[in-house]
Image (cartoon, rainbow, N blue to C red; front, side):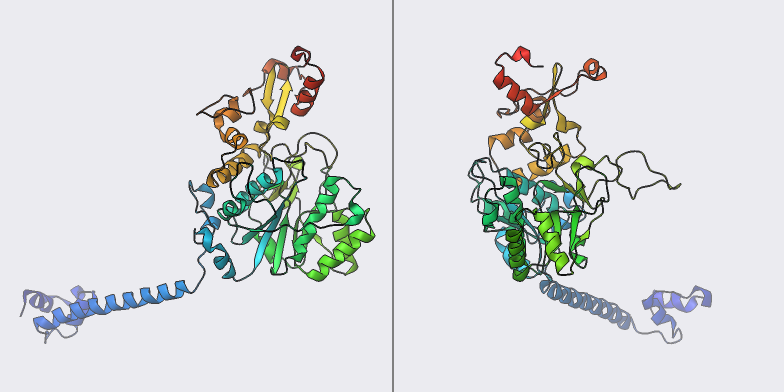
Length: 452
């Protein structure tokens, strides 16, 4: 008899061991098992446990190999990663198409990069890059960019670069409406979004104008029944009953695509928003409108959109707590909906952002609640794509952007910038001059002292 077995025999009933092994011995204290039985039990139990663990692990690996992995770029911490993965699935851009095909639903965000021939800087391509990066933070779905651009201005490949942001690049097919040829370029360009209906390999699409930013996830749009679009509310009155198709969920259909084109040709005076509304209203498939908290203009951010964040007394909490999920255009100056300067902060073009006031030259987008946010997204994307364009390097260099001082061998294209206003002039309410207006005045008047 071992010392351990003798110890067990001497225990009182209240002191009986509780472990599985000791419990086995305590069942028959009058006839303890030989030493080798205890040893065999211990080894056998451990072997069985280890074998069960290995079998479960192997089964888990097998099941995992049959399923598409969850996209890391849409994870909870994706927005805080210093070096997020290059692609939203496996991290291997070459495998994006294969991974997309394994998705349970062929859904996609769709955007366009296309500019008039005189726009050699390709502004829509830069805008699409920043928008794609903003969506990449939150989404589990693919993105599709329709463009015929092969390279960025610095020669970087468009297709290879956008794959690093989880974007599939497809050819852009011009929507040609002969009856619009005498219309302004912006009017004609707005109808290019109709080709989203021609992407019939997708079960559902969310169209997004690229002069915007996704501030929170938009994936919930894929789950809503019917079509949903933003509100046209240029005067910031809120809850307006008019469609702004800058954001629009839809089901691609060749029949609908042909029908929309036919209506646009029959009624060339209608805007693209009006064509979409009238076409689907006539088919008794009306478009529902998103709330002002879900989609809105950047110029309306301080207009009193109801916030979900209220005090326990049910009162408004001080501050701006109602930024929309999708913010269309940052705002700027000018009152016309098609103003050239209504989106000055969602751009890396600094001249419209300059504001000359008295003796001070400010970058007014440093005072905008989303100015720094858009810049961060833009520069993250540019870094990931290894863009070497001088205007981008200058915009993304902190010394250049905040002070206008050259740094690290990068020549600032913005020129000098003051970090703060002259508070004497500020309290005197000195009126400033926007950058483009100042540049225009300087061309007309060669004497710089004549311009504030």
